Length: 254
Image (cartoon, rainbow, N blue to C red; front, side, top):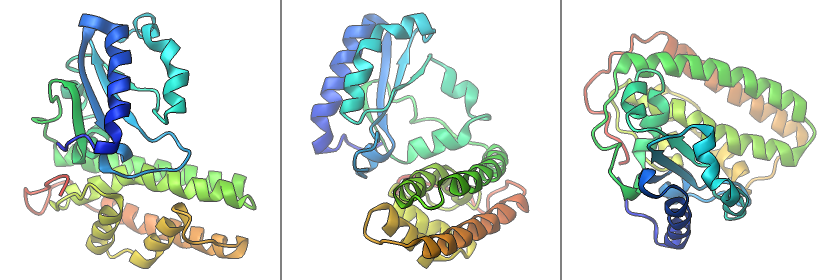
């Protein structure tokens, strides 16, 4: 668990006030996670993520906060992840990557720390890693084809794909029994080193995502070819593993 970043306190206070007003005694927990909890910013993109645990998350109950959604989006807050008590414990075998990545960096805004004591089975993590990377690769190829020639949209695709694939990268380190860094840059460095991937390519992708590197159409074609090639390499490595870690460390948020 981390502390709420200083620059996020005004936003978290505003969000918590809205949520408490909407749900009252039904509210159990509010947790900040994702890029904002890691201290990472995405210009003009929704990147502030909250998990909210309430006694009842049926659509009619969640409608209590519907009037706040538009304002939250203006403040770059995504629509919250609403869960009922006990959902996390019952879902660790199905969605281990989501909660594993969440646990690398989060801050409790209100209520109990429901992530503190959770643990993951390596076989569950490996199985979801295999499913996710194969499915996400199919979507990445399709999106690239649809967006080819639109450099602004392709830059956004790179940004989104890195955030999407970080779930797999964290899982890939976990099943190797390695520490999982919270920051995306450090995470990319760790997974490229562990699996022998092209670190310079991932630095280029990060540079494009941050706006520090500009790439023309021909260069973008080459970069995406290499990107998919490296992800295929990671997919094959995960596919060949049993899901048993080399050791039992797998620390998160270092």
